[in-house]
Amino acid sequence: MTAAEFQQLAPGIPLQPGIYKYYDSSNSLIYVGKAKSIRKRVSSYFNKNLNSYKTHELVRRIHHIEFTIVNSEQDAFLLENSLIKEFQPIFNINLKDDKTYPFIVIKNEPFPRVFLTRKKIPDGSEYLGPYTSVKKVRELIEFTRQTIPLRNCSLNLTEKNIREKKFKVCLEYHLGNCKGPCEAHQTEEGYRENIEQLKNLLRGNLTPVLKHFRDEMKRFAADMRFERAEITRKKVEFLENYQARSVVVSTRTGDMDVFSLVKDKEVAFVNFLMVRNGAIVQTHTTKVETHLDESPTEILSFSVAQLRDTFNSEATEVVVPFEIEYPQTELTITIPKAGDKKKLLELSEKNADYFIEEIKNKARLQLSRNTDKIKILEQLQANLQLPSLPLHIECFDNSNFQGSYPVSAMVCFKNGEPSKKDYRHFNVKTVEGINDFASMKEAVYRRYKRLRDEEQAFPQLVIIDGGKGQLGAALDAIRELGLLGQSTFVGLAKNEEEIFFAGDQESLKLPYNSESLKLVRRIRDEVHRFGITFHRQKRSKGTFKNELEDISGIGKATADMLLKEFRSVKNIREKTEEEIAAVIGKAKAGIVQKYFSGNDGNDG
Image 1 (cartoon, one colour):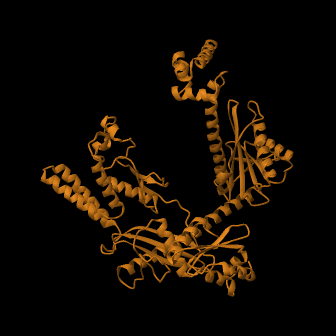
Image 2 (image 1 turned 90 degrees about the horizontal axis):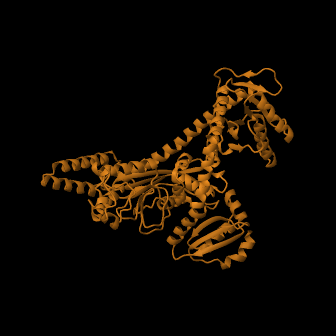
């Protein structure tokens, strides 16, 4: 859109607060922004000299503009963040955080179960979190089970089922980990009290939980139930130790969210500390991508809104290192100069710095690993005198069982590592009986015909597991496809680890225990594993099919019903016709019984 074209549209753009959306010629949303006055803000893109190439590129792509009027600047702020999170336009700030975070769910059911989940289902259950670490969630759940007795079974504990005594208490009851609601040893009201204690624990609010257990301990002691009092005393001690291990800033600090921003060249990193009841309960650092040279204020304002929304924060105070645009009036923005909050902010910055250093260390380690892998591939290239570095290697192997269920497998290694998405297995279709050469030819033909037809990249090296015969069959397939010279094909002799080239009289042995030989062994072992796994699956399915589905008049569904009921063909053979008829009906039972009777007679 040109400035002249915009001038024709400008009078129709409102002066009220709201959000504006830029779309390109393919009707894709490329940018969302907020403004106190939509017309003034949008006009600024077309009326000023654009020094930034990125902004110039944004304006060049604008095809049409949409806007939404809202009642206040706060509403515009919330709507902008919501739209960016949902659509992630390419020119907006983007939090590079595509994880699915875990929750702790309290199920909406009698005597609710409590467990980890990644999916929120709108069934009335209560979801606590999300949490930044699965390990942390498991630790929390285990911690609560050490102190608060809740059931971990999946019984349907309706009032009717309990009244009719459908269930019996399990070992967890006798161990003291559950109070036995399944046999009405605990009321639903008492169980709900335990759930409230659990919520306090998960929110880091240990004070009411400790008070509850101390009061309980005193009651047990007063009633001379000293064993129960001792059990409760140990729970109190366990809770106190847990509280001592927590990162407690100050019990006077209360609930707040702490954010810091660290820029590393063109990339920004935002750290978030969630402080509840004076203790840090969660910490999270995220990478932020910017596209229009946004200021630190814009980056942090956006990140605060997004992260508070992601982690369902209800804290009414946010601690930040500098002034941010955050129009929510009910929220207190604090920029500390000293004291506990300043220490928290410094701790947040340390976490961000540590995160950046970890990324750099991983990159250095990956570079080192990649360098090592390249050296191994260069060694293999030299050993085999390959014309190019074997960055892409494929390996084939056959498998059959007494001539039945023939299959072939192919594994793919890229840059010295397995590329499992490129693995393939082949049901051999054109070969009868045992014929490894023909099976290999079919698999190789099908693989490289597809690569040729789809114009995909060919491997630099193809390993045929099985020696000269299979290698010759594979090259016949390549010759028929007109692909000779596309890849180097070698044969690998079984067990001997000798490598054969087509036409060579002598085999080649790689240097003993060299890294290149280790790589070839690894590829060979992987193709064996992959092929054998597939072969077992097919053989297992084939055994059932031969025994039942090959009976004239018995289909797969009927065979499945019989196997589900009687577990094995052997058991079916031993059943009476009446027993089989109870599952599949009298007519089909007669067919099955006649088949097995006939086979028994032939065998005898």
